[in-house]
Length: 59
Image 1: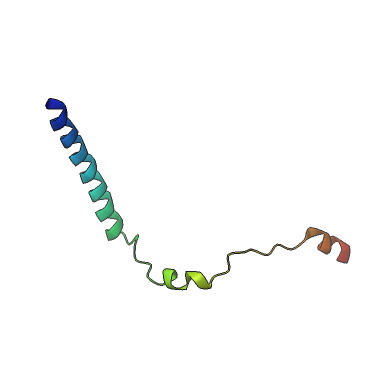
Image 2: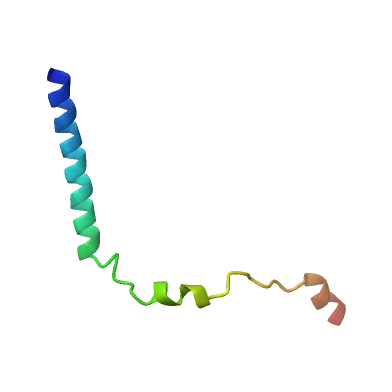
């Protein structure tokens, strides 16, 4: 029975630590970006790389 009380105490301490870290991140502005999610689908996902042989042949 003692192990159950110890597990409950440890889980409450861990939950409290995560809650404190969450509140700290909200206060520092970690979740303030409301613009980027609405336009993320408009951004290009592919990057176009130039071929290095084209540059050498033109010189």
